[in-house]
Image (cartoon, rainbow, N blue to C red; front, side, top):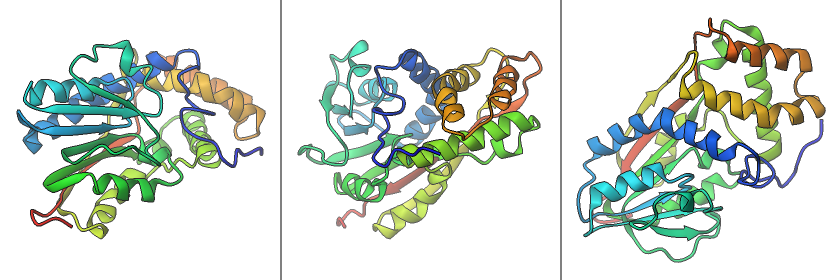
Length: 268
């Protein structure tokens, strides 16, 4: 197998230059936004807060946060590539193009939110510590990330094999961890956060859903490389993709594990 020693999400894999990436991210957002919005609402986001959406993607969470904090607050939306952020309305956002591994000075925030980002970074531990340092005393950190507890149990063997191959490919190429979301409570506690809690949302895979569209578009990008580099047999890839197109599709997707923690009022 060929591995990319220094591969990065958004560059070698899932870059904004790749055909269909905008639609793929839009499908991901549509699938998980309702759960994210419920968690953030329960957290008590309110007018006047200063929020950071780190790894903001296409900006749906950033814009929702802007609605909540109003004119008295601020939402900073940052990403390695801000092309997709700028595709939508950015008038209420402070858009910053930066690498989270070496961010500019951004100030302190009442809320730092990061979704489906850290699991794809090789230096995720250092980046997490950096994000914690941006939360003001009494503020909140919310991490939503992958927890693939369901697809290994899929009734369709080709699909479960293809998903396992994809995780192996992403781990080798860019360092992705398929269960990272479940490790976040301990990682927050190790860094001194309090009131840490964890929830898990597992969307269904069914014909015509946005979650199914997301995985179809993801396979369109990853399957050629997985087959070429020996991670997956072509015939298995074909059967897995046919399963996603089948009217009989009935399965579960990758879960989104959301961890919320609070920086103590006296700081860390």
